Image (cartoon, rainbow, N blue to C red):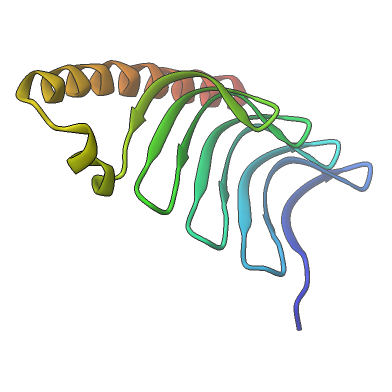
Length: 133
């Protein structure tokens, strides 16, 4: 039997605080809710293997986040209403490397950028959880 499942906190009969929500399709979200909406930091896992980890506002991706797609493409940046509006890092699928090329200088620049973004992202996560504790 397919059904929606929620395990977590409620406030006034609405999802509020930390919880895990599962859809009948097999997709699921783990993170914070406010007034029944995904709100704050959370991770969404879609059934096709795509995932988004980052900030949510009233049920939509809003703020810093990381989108990992099934083809291996990774996008890190700022999202607004489920769309990436400010891309800080993009790692293209291995299938596209042959088309784009892979010079040593390009690899070094990408690795440097990736390290800086990872530190920024870690800081975001630590700051978020520090406020919640």
